[in-house]
Length: 64
Image (cartoon, rainbow, N blue to C red):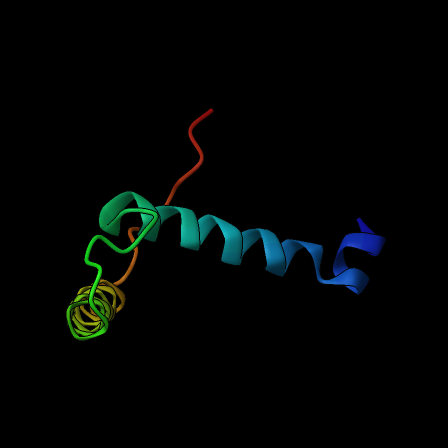
């Protein structure tokens, strides 16, 4: 456990999990081909993610 805290492994796992959640919502890749359309898609995705962060994540409670 000490090596995980000292190496930052737990924080990295949290970030990777969050990115996985975002990819489930938004998809793993850009869908449009032109630069202008991709810029619009990224802006829309950023707005969605910001809204998700504003709403907050639900609190998990261990059962058992």
